[in-house]
Image (cartoon, rainbow, N blue to C red; front, side):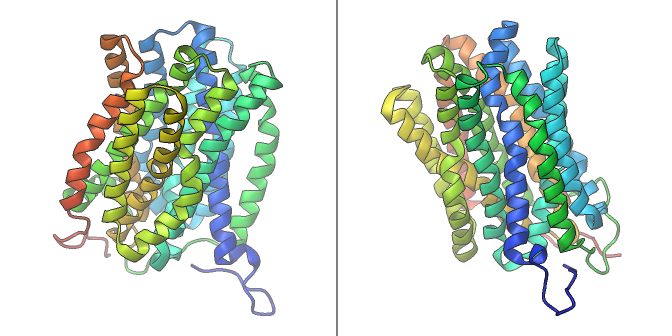
Length: 414
């Protein structure tokens, strides 16, 4: 990656490896902070608009679709405009925060839904350029670098429900609309800081002798068994995560009678452990390969889901959420690193777009499957059993499936 140098010949601190990783990881965490606060808003929105089970499922599906559908072309956009990655990231962040603010200003339900969805669209423009930036600059430490990026998002996913829930419960009296408006002030400052840090590192030039990116590249990747395998792995993880998250806040609030602070604290457990362990997990995958961490993670997730489905509440539920949270979030980074190991040069964004497109499918169908299961059993606790059933086949498949491209290189040469 081309970077500027000072008159003394030293690399400016903004372009150094640690500063580069920290900027992208922290920016990722901030972006997820603004989006993840929705988990605490959900019970308040459900109560305000008197949503049914399928109303909640519809809201979750619209939100996931809006955040996932752009990945079909954002990967192309990332590869095509790779020299502008340092502009795309802060633009994605401020647009996501602004969308959530406008949602809080909307008095009618579908206005709220629309702008929450637009927040997901804006957020989708972060992952392909950010992960590509780290993958191309740290090819020998790809798993660790991407895991730091994932830890940033994990921190945002964990701390936002925890702290926003406390703010709503003890300061703003559950006025989520006031919160999203006030949160816009620091968002502007963070945007300026992210841009300044990334501008100091310089743009990422395209690899030599590659043809221009095509919008069909994301779909072309699916010709290869390794990419299909890894997309399936990402689908499974996302189904378990998004499916449970669609109803977990309401389960905690309605079935276990928790306030916003309690809901936020328990939702935070789904990712909190991954914030600390994620980089170590990524480093471990750099050393021993990607397969063992992926398979082991899915075993832990399956056991955790079954445990919560059986006990339903109490200390055991908290412990299971915490242990499962170490792996449920971290394994996504190892899976993405495996996909980028197999990616042809110059198509990193398209590969990331493909991976997150598989999350789209999971995010769209999982709320309705979970909602149907709740309707048939009259129990929200069933969502944990459904998640476990979906995860179990992935354990066997990922133990033997190919993780490398073996049928020839994709044609990216000019």
